[in-house]
Amino acid sequence: IIVPSVFSRDFYWASLGLHPVVLPYVIDPIRIAALNREPRYLTFVNPDTAKGVFWFARMAEVLGRTRPDVPILVVEGRAGVDWLGRCGLDLTGVKSIHRMKNTPDPRAFYRVSKLVLMPSLWNESFGRVAAEAMLNGIPVVASNRGALPEVVGDGGLTLPIPPRFTPESRTAPTADEVAPWVQHILQLWDDTATLATAVERAGELRGPDGHRDRRRGGLHRARGERRQRHH
Image 1 (cartoon, one colour):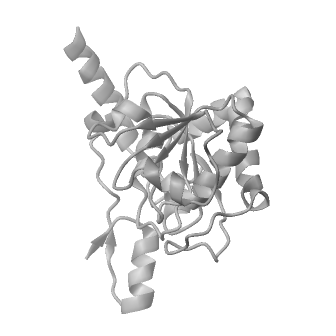
Image 2 (cartoon, helix red, strand yellow):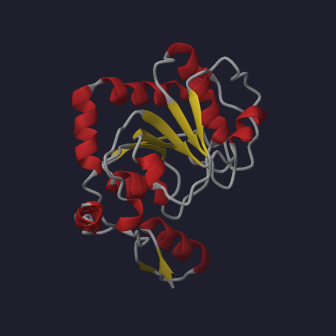
């Protein structure tokens, strides 16, 4: 049995007594390497309940009210932006939210992302969006569910979400509950030195053994190959 993270390995051992082998998710660098980046958005991919759309909606409401200068990009996936309207919050006055339709090319949103949010309520077995973002040098602010702390490492922040919020939850958190998230997001957003450090660390994605992941080198090669094709 092969699993993509130490978290998954430990889960199968604890629940089923199995001994899987850890092989991190294989990422095609050519598919995700964003050229000519113009980072300007706080990006949330796939506004699904398990991915934390209710948690995100409250953060968007707070940011839209207190920091409308922070543009927010919602990238549709299995779920669409219509889920934001089901969160019990009035977001009609939030003009900083932008929508990107579901796309087979993730480079479209990685190219314009300054930070990536992943407030997942699910115990992620890996966290592909987090890994792809960091391989592009984009810091990630994620929940501490599942394998996300393992994947994000020093390439961003992992923050807790109260246990009462589950993939089945249909209640938005309070402004006070998301306040630590908003604080950390704005610290990265506003502090150039902090963001630069986070970007550098994000570019040093590490594998489950703690060593620098060689896929980062593959990303650089992919960018070089694609630039050569354009010339």
